[in-house]
Amino acid sequence: MTQIYSKILGTGRFLPERVLTNADLEQMVDTTDEWIQARTGIKRRHIAADDQTTADLAEAAARDAMAAAGAEPGDIDLIMVGTTTPDQVFPNVGCLVQERLGIHGCPAFGLEAACSGFIYGLSVADRFVANGTAKCALVIGAETLSRMTDWSDRTTCVLFGDGAGAVVLGPAEVPGVISCHLGADGRYQDLLYHPYGTSRKQRPEDTEGPFIQMRGNEIFKVAVKTLENIVDETLEANDLPREAIDWLVPHQANIRIIQATAKRLAMPMEKVVLTLEDHGNTSAASVPMALDTAVRDGRIQRGDLVLLEAFGGGLTWGSALIRY
Ligand code: COA
Image (cartoon, rainbow, N blue to C red):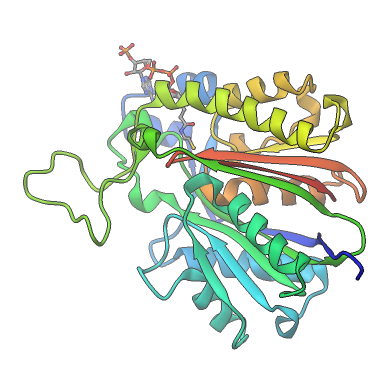
């Protein structure tokens, strides 16, 4: 029997119209454009309108990716949405997107792995396509992090933004998605988290607000180490030298974390796709939006070897090596 692989047929993204600059943040908290740029690399981020939800962003990115792939709603037979900011507890955002696209019956998942959500989703969808269960999978990363950001906390509010990115995966005779590597370690759960949900509600005695909580310094160090390990693991699993990678598409959390990963790959920064200056950290949306940016501006070409990587709350982490 011929081995089936999965391949990215098209990419897409959607950013809400409203832009919040570092200068805007200077008016809101005790910070400066200079500090934010020097410590993070971020200049601005997009923020969803009050009536815009994660499903709105996800739908727009999905339509963009489907147009690029030449896929019709009737072609889609699997929907995966990586998000930590779903519209509601259930139905999952995948079901909401499915209904808006006028598709009925195919499986639709929400997948919660914080900033690694898209790579986790890509890995699952790759398996569905590779074993013949799906022929045309929509994989989306979409977030409205602004809804759980404490806009009076300068240590977190300068980092995050909203957006959505998507890819359409289809079958191929040679690997498009070559290998995915996922990991998690709950021992680090206290470094980055949102304290409340449905089962654990905020109680009157709780001192933390219903916002993202982060120990920035500590997660920074764990992120650098974890990403170094996953880069090594991905290269070793595929018996590849570092020079083989054409493009690095990293999770867009902090320029200094990205520089450390590029150094591990001995990769010049011109080969690293950076969007964090304009997007900030958009969690699960960050990697697919960066991928789409470099595909559309012509940097990433068909046949290029691309390494996607992410880490996030959990901790979770993952990489995907793809032949675009
Ligand atoms: N503006 C100005 N000063 C700020 C500030 C802001 N927005 N945020 C924090 N500071 C201050 C701190 O209060 C501290 O002041 P102090 O020395 O008087 O106590 C000082 O800047 C240094 O803080 P520190 O936390 O050590 O800075 P840092 O160099 O570690 O940068 C982060 C902070 C958050 C940018 C950095 O730790 C980081 O990016 N961590 C990773 C976060 C991340 O990627 N999270 C998502 C993972 S998916």
